[in-house]
Amino acid sequence: MKNLPYRDNVGAVLFNDAGLILVARRADLPNAEGAPGGWQLPQGGMDAGEDPAFAVFRELEEEIGTARAEILAEHPRWLTYDLPEHLIGKALGGKYRGQRQKWFALRFLGTDADIRLDLDPHPEFDAWRWVRLAELPGLAVEFKRAIYEDLAQEFARFAG
Image (cartoon, rainbow, N blue to C red; front, top):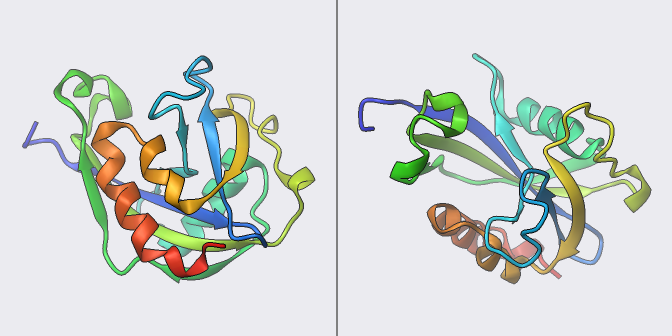
């Protein structure tokens, strides 16, 4: 596992006018309504040489159907997580040990009607909702929980 690289990735903590954040339910876990990991923040891989700020808007467009947002802040560090052993060789195309992520806080400039999970022919998510930032760590799978705790602390100033 230690010989495998991290996959470069960006993530979005998308705040609405009420200071709530968007979380979406993974389409491959439709019965995970209350289970940790069933709901997550929009995130995705970066293309080689791609600017993280550009990538986060591309990922929003791909995953939730809209990039109507503006960047409020960029997390000062790249955050990493390792996949659990049982997912090595299976998740992330089997090529990575985990992900190295650059996270952004963004303000949503659209309306709820702009969020369209059905625009991608292979949607990653099948449902979405607005939640309090403080709820975020409890939604994470164990191996991503430390990142979500860090995000909840770093971006708390934008929460309602």
